[in-house]
Length: 163
Image (cartoon, rainbow, N blue to C red; front, top):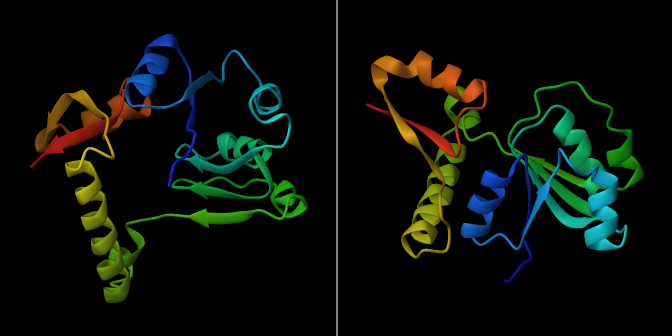
């Protein structure tokens, strides 16, 4: 299945990275409002699917950016937000928390996540998914430093801690 991929970024360096990763469009959310880029790229209809990895205010922006009866997927929705726009647009909303089966010792959930991770591994090995890894690698002893590094937004891509 083919898709046009639109990625929000906050600077030109990020725009270059996502274009190098084969995104079709890089949208600088600091320079353009959600309403403006939805109008520009979708004639005001909204995107079919919005994938949010930041949460908080960005989740509300995701609800604004998606089309009526569209889908929002998030990996981080730890804030209390007004869900009325989600209801008004009849959105499908999915949260993905890979750690939940571990917290609750849910064997079926662990097995399902294992299958998903195996599938992702196959996609990465086939070159269909290109993970973005921050060049700064931390040791296990530097876990707190790694967390601080990511929390202030110094990373570009996933932060790796070696064990």
